[in-house]
Structures are given as structure tokens and as C-alpha cells.
Image 1 (cartoon, rainbow, N blue to C red):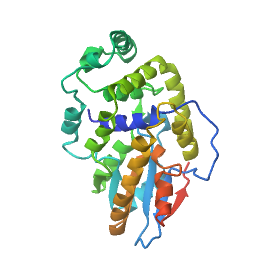
Image 2 (cartoon, rainbow, N blue to C red):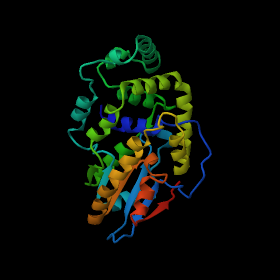
Image 3 (cartoon, helix red, strand yellow):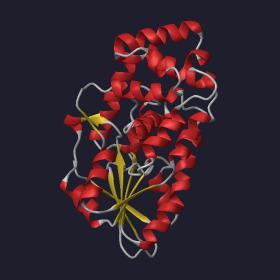
Length: 291
């Protein structure tokens, strides 16, 4: 359960990836960004993560280490360092008054059960009381083409502990969970079954996303997400509204001290991405290439 917050957010970014498109570059080829100006006493830093990535592709360069060390506090999407996180996740992950077998049709549940048994390696009955997003978390992790995986968020927590830095969240786990709780069951069923039916395609698309990430190409990542048929009509809830809610929290934190922010790379690009929203508020946001 410790990785569920990471995997849940990973789904928001990775699952909504359509086939690769050629992105029009706007100079957003960086994962690490310096935030300055607007009367800030000192610069803060913003990093775009890929929540789960193959260990061979996991890189924390010297500049990233330096900016992290220079910062006084660390903000992730949610405070994964919260001692109560695991208990909250368990409580919020449980279905109330129904089971997965009540949500999925008999034929879909049968297909899903066979898929989890043969591909994931566990019977679906073990998850029958869990909300559908738990399935997404497991499917997302399984779609990585490797057995050894890393998480930037979990590594940042380790680094923060070693450097005695406080870890905070830009939103609560309850707010993240509410995104799925507000989705109709029928839509969640459709998304899960599409993932299962196109599992090999999903694995290839994850590889394309990872390649764009390794190239630090935020434009390509943003284009992938916006091209997906699944995200159509849900952009505000899944990405844009969250980005907007984060900005005043970031501003307040930066006014007090030097902060290191780390959020999914899919939140950074585009006209309503965190980078552009900060610029609209008068900040200078400059990319720092490391790869």
C-alpha cells in the first residue's frame, strides 16, 4: 500500500496517453526549473517527475541533487511522508456497499478475472472490495517493461529524511481520491476494460512516454495526454483545476523560504500547466537541462 499514492497519480498521467504525435516545441525541454523574480527573496525549484520508471532510466543528476540540497522544504503532490498515509489510503480505497463484481458486467468481470490471473498473477477476488483505481495502479505498474522500478517521489522522501527536510503536499490524498469518486462507475469500467483490451498497446505507449521523459520533452508529454480520447471532457478535473489550486500554495511557500517542488511532468506543460501559470503571475521560470 505504500506505493499506491504514487501509482494512482501515475495513472492520471500515463493511462491517458494516446499514440505518439509530433509535438511543436516551445523550448520546454527541461524537467528541472528555477522559479525567481516577483520579489522572491531567493529562487525555488520545480521538477517534473515520472512517478514510476524503470530503474535503468532513473536518473538524479548533480544539478538536481544540488538544487534539492539547497532547498529548505520539499513539496510533492501529496504528503507521502505523512505517517497516517497508509491508513488513509486503505480507508479511501475500499468500496462502500458494493463490490467490483457489482460494478462490472458478468462478461467484463470474467474477462478481467482471467486477465489478472494470467497476466498480473493474482485472482481478482482479492481486490473485489477495492475501488477501480486500485486496478489502474496495478495495471500501470505492470505495463512497465521491467521488473526493477524506481519512484522519484519515494527517492525524494529518502533524500529529505537524510537532509532533515520537511515534506509537504500541494493537495491532500482525499482531494486526489475525490477525482475518481466523482467519476461515474460506467466511465471507470470503460477505462479499465480499455486498458485490459489494449494492454500491449498501453505498454508500447508507456515506453514512448518514457522516451519523451528521458528527452525532457514536456511538449511531447503534454501532447500525448491531450490526444487521448479518455481525457476528453475531463481535462479540467484531472489536470487544469489541480494546477490552478497549486499556484497560491506554491506562492505562499516560496515567499517564506527556498522550496523544491516535485509534481508529475504532465502538469508542467501547456497553456494551463504549472510553468505557464507561474509566468502569468509574474515569475521568471527558467529550464535547467541536465540530461
